[in-house]
Structure formats: C-alpha cells, structure tokens
Amino acid sequence: MNERKWKQLFAVVRKEAAPAPSEDLAANVLRAIRTGRSAEKPETLSIFDQLNLLFPRLAWTAAAIIAFSVAADWGLTAAGVPDVGDGVSQISAQWFLPPNEF
Amino acid sequence: MNDDAELLERIRNGAPDDFAEVVRRHQSRVFAILHRYERDAHKIEDLAQETFVKAWRALEQFDGRAPFEHWLSRIAVRVALDHLRKEKRRQNEIGLPELGEDALDWLRRDDEKDELDGRAAAEILDLALRALSPADRVVITMQEIEGRSVKEISAVTGTSGVAVRVRAMRARAKLKRALEKLVKL
Image 1 (cartoon, rainbow over the protein chains, first blue to last red):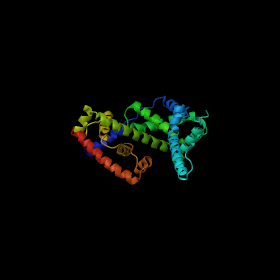
Image 2: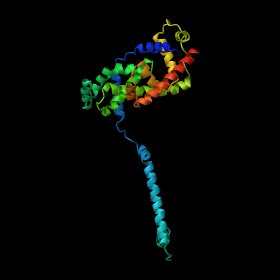
Image 3: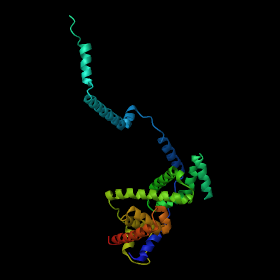
C-alpha cells in the first residue's frame, strides 16, 4: 500500500463520528455502582462456609496437637514415666476387673 | 476543570449521586476513545459503563495533579485494551470476517480519484489491525487516528517515550504488511 492510500485510509477513519451515548448511561452507571456496593456487603456465612474457611488452620492445629502428643509420649517413655497404656491397664484392673471377693 | 474538582469533592464528601453529572460531562469523550477500538454501539455503551464504574472505584486515587479528563481517558484506554485482548482470543476461535465489495475495490485500485467511504475504511482498518497485538493497536490508533503525541501516548499507556516510539514503528510496519496482504486477497 502506498503512502497516499495509507493517508487516505486514516483520514477517512478519523472523520468517522462516534455513536451518541444513550440517555440512560448515567443512570445505568449509578445502578451498577449501587449494585456493586451492595454486593460488597459482608454476607452471612453458613457453618459449612465458616468451616471451609477455617479448614487450613484447623488442619494445621490438629497436626500440631498430634505431633506434640507423640513427642510428649516418646519423651515421657524415655524418662521412665509410665505411659498412657500402663495407666489405662492399671485403672481397668482396679475398677473394672476387681479381684474376685467370693 | 475547576468545576470537575468541585464536583469530585462533593462526591467524596458523601454525594454519590452527583457522579451522574461526571458521566454526563465526560461520556462523549469516553465514547470517542472507545469507538476507535470497537464499532458495535452496544458494546461501546457497555465499555463506557465499565470505564465509569472503574473510575468510581478508583476515585480515591485521583489526586488532581492532572486534569480529570486525562485520568478518565487513561482508564478508558485500559478498558479498551482489556476488551481487545478478550476479542483477540475470541477472533482466534471464530476466524476473520470478509471484506465488502467497496472495500475490496478500493484496495485493488490505485486511482487518485477513487473515493473511500467511512464504513469501508473502518472495515479495512479493523481487519488489518487484527494482525497487531492489542498493545500495538492502542499505540497506532492513538498516533495515527487520534493524532496524539508520543508524550501523550506515554502518559496514557504508562510506558516510556522510547518504548512508545519503538512500538509505534513496529506496529506501523506490521499494519502496512497486513494491508498489503489484504490488497492481494
């Protein structure tokens, strides 16, 4: 394409007028703004939504408790303190399986 | 422009309905910008609405150092750029439209007296501009159609003057090649 045609093409396009905005444009913009504002209000979350939001924290907390318990049990066993299993056996022997009195 | 400052101050102080006046004052300018990137009047209306809603949301960031109209123009160009990116993806899926007879005739002839009407010119340019990236298209449109300076384009697009010059040069070459391809159709 030569320079003359290039210039002619742009000159014609430049003259093209934009369509006129509709009379409702301002009202539509205000409506969209208001709708946007109401959508930004905090919604009431269901118990499941709240659990979903909390899930990562709950999962990490649970993992930390498990890790702490395992470490504590391992530490206490190493120190010679009776572990939970021993305690349970002792309780069941004393309370649930008392010596035969007859 | 002082009127704009007063109006914006009123809006910031709790009169959001006055934003309708901002829309009325600047809608023609916003339409004129968007019209360069989209020919469908309904789509232009939607894009103009999007421009004003974005301006509303970012109103706190307007510091008044530049005229409000310049700030709003920048938002309109960004909206147009996003629109072009979406359209580009869509066009890749549906293919290119065909040129009308008037447009093809004008492209093939090399007669100085050959007239070109606005619709055919827009058709040709629209098709050729599809060969450009959205960012290239914005730069060439602002330079060749809107007649803006490198400094103005740089301010609107947020890129350096050198980057604008380089992009404009490449875009011009790409557009020429695209137009030459159309001549061979």
